[in-house]
Length: 131
Image (cartoon, rainbow, N blue to C red; front, side, top):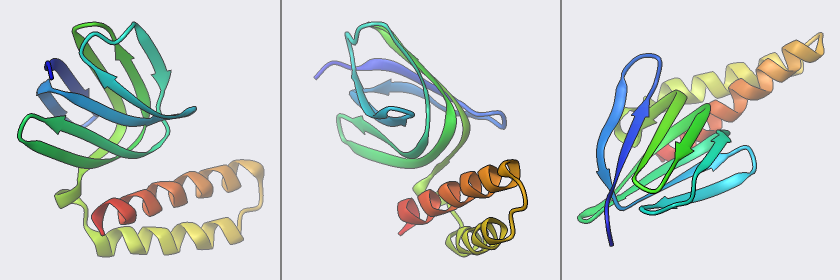
């Protein structure tokens, strides 16, 4: 299988910049897989697993929000947050889940409810990836 150039950038850092055989990422419409030679593609990202396949294995990360832009030779992911599985502090993620559930129960406006829901999705995703 041929490789393509993949760059993943977050506000904090260049998360990944190298060659990959395949990347699978959660968009707002569902999961999408990108290979070398993919047609031009742009989408907003949701919250879910990011899977990068290399010739010698696969790496998994927790991703939340952003955009993906792909063409025949390269793919760029601009992510709101992205953490490798081994970077996730599981206890911290569980505390964030608990806090988000509490926020959801006490939300007094649609905006507060939406924010709590987003935080809950992010925390649950981080837990699922870490476990």
